[in-house]
Length: 165
Image (cartoon, rainbow, N blue to C red):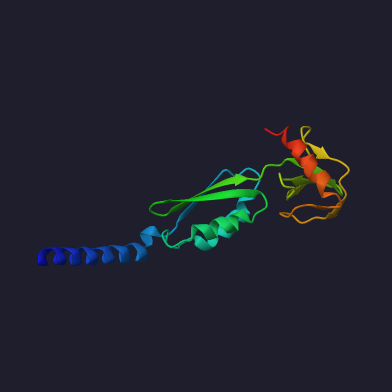
C-alpha cells in the first residue's frame, strides 16, 4: 500500500511539473493564426481583432471569446477555432451569404437571409437579385434593415432564397 501511495505522490508531482512547464514555456505561445474560408470579409479587420492573442499560451486562450469577437463582424456567420500544437490557431470562417440587394442612395445594401445588412456595395453583378419597393427607414451594417414594411422584406428574401445556390 505504501508503494502505491509513493507512486501516486510521484505521479502527481511529475504532472504538476509538466503542467507548469506547459503553461510557462514560450513553446506553446501563439505564433501563427491561420484563417480559412474568407471571401468577402476583410482579412485585415479579423487580423486586428486577433492580434491581442499573439504570444498568449495556446491552452489559456478562450476560444469562445475569439468566436464571439469574429462573429460580430457582419460578413461572418460562424467561426470555428482549432488549436494546432504547438503554437497555431486555425480559424475556420463561414461567411453570411448574400440573398438579395436593396437600392440605397447610389449603392446597394447586401442582405443576408434574415434581412441583416452584410455590407454596402457600389455595383452589382448581372445575376444579383434586387428587391424593389422597399422603403428604408434606417441603415446599420450588421443589423436588420429597418423598413416600413418588414413583411414585404421578409417575403422577398424568402422568395430570393429559392434562386441562391
